[in-house]
Image (tube, rainbow, N blue to C red):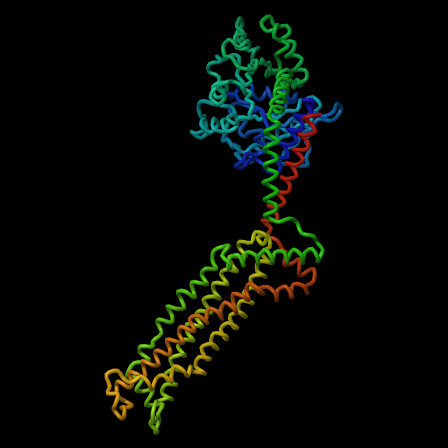
Length: 610
C-alpha cells in the first residue's frame, strides 16, 4: 500500500494543478472538490493563525487586532527531503520562491489589500500559498476569516453574515474536514466554530475540535471536561494547543523552540500530563494527516469514477472542437477538404429532410407558384373590350376572312408572357432558400466553428455557385414559357370551327366577326388554351428549377472551390485555417485539463495500490 505521505502529497499536487488550471467545478463537480481538504474555522482572536503557524513551524501569517484574515488562504504543505531549504510559492506570483517567511507574511498582506484595500472589508477570492519544507506533513489547510458577532467601525453592517456565508460555503461541502478552533478560556457552549460545525456536520464525522489558550485559563480551572469529551462529544478526539505568548512573539522565539515549550507544558502539567501524548500542534498535524489519508483512500473509487467521467467529457469536447492540425500543406489541404465534406453532408441533410429547411423549396412549388399564377390578370386581359381591340389591331387594313388567327396568336402570346413573372419569382425564391440553407449548414457544422476564415470562404464559394445555378435556372424556365409561345398546340385550335356560339343560329350563313358572342368565344378559347399551358408550366417549372438549382447544389456546390483550393500554396492554406483565438484558448485549456485528469488517474492508480 502507498505511504501516507505519498498519497496525501499526490492529492496536494493534483489540487494545486487544478487551481492553476482553474478547475474549480462544473455541473458534475470538479476534481478539486472531490479531493478532501481541511478548513480552519474559529472566532476572531481564537488563536486560529497561531495554530496554523504551529503546524507549519514558521511565523508567516499577518497579525494584529480585529479582523486580520480578510481573504481565504489555501495553504498547501509539501514535505520535502531533509536538508532542502524551506520556501513558499504563491499562485498569483508563479516562478517566484519566497525563502524569507517574513516576506511571505508581507505578500499575503499586500495581496489582501490589492482586492480589499486597506480597509476591514473581506473578499471570498482565495490566496493560494504552497509551503515546501522538511518540517511539515503533507496537508492542505484553508484558513478562513474569523467569525464575529458585531461589525466594528469601518466594516459594512453585513460583515457578520458575509463571513458566516463564506465559511459555510467551504465547510458545508461533504469532502471538507472541519478544524474547529475554540479558546479554552471561554465557555465551549459559546464557541462560534462549534456552533457552525454542529449545523453543517451534526454527526461530528468531519469535525476535529481544537482547544487553544489552555495556559491562559484561570488558576484552579482546567479544560478536561472538553478534552475528554464530556462537555461536547465529537467522533474524533479533542486536541489541546498551547501557542506562543505575546512575549515569545515579541522576542522572535522560533516555532521549533515553541513546539518544545508546548510539549514541556503538557508533560509537566498536573491536569493534562496523562493526555500529553495526544496534545500539541505536532500531534494535531499528524492526526489530521492520518485522517486525511484514510478519507482519501476510502474515496479513491469515487474519485477515479469522477476522473474517468470527466476524461470522457473532455475527450468528447475536444473532438467537437477539433484536434490540432498538422503544419504541412498536405495535412492542411486534407483538413480543408474534410471541413468542406462535413458542411456538404449537413447541407444535403437539409435538402433531403434529415434537417429542417428543405421543405421550404416544396412550399415554393406547392403554394407560392400556384398562388402567383392564380393572381395573373387574365380576366382583364381577355375581357370583351380588350379582345375586340387586339383582334381589330391584328387585322389591320385587311379584316380576317374566316377566323382571326393573327388575333388569336397575339392574345395567346401576350397572355403567355405573364407566366414569366411567376417563373422568375420561383427561381429567386428557391435561390434564397438555398442561400439560407448554406448559412444554416455552415453554422451547424461543428467542425467548421473553429475556422472563421474557412467559413467565409465556403460561404462565398457556395453563394457564387448558387448564383450560377440561378442564372441557368432562370434561362431554362423562361425558355419553357417561350417554347409554349413559339409553337401552339394545333389540335386544340382544330376543334374551334366545330364549336358554334352558344345561343346562335347554327344555320346562319355568316357570323358577325365583331359581334359580342363571337368575341366572347374567342376570349373563352384563348382562356382555355392559356389554362392548359398554365397546368403544363405548373409542373414543368418546378422540374426545371430542381434540375438546374437543387440538383446541381447537391451535386456540385463546391466543385469550383475544390479546384481552386487544390492549386493554393501552403501560406494560403494556413490563412484559410486561421482559427478563432477564443476557440484556440478553449482547446488549449481543455487539453491541459485532460492531461491533468489522465495524469491524476495514473498517479492515483500507481500510488494507491503500491
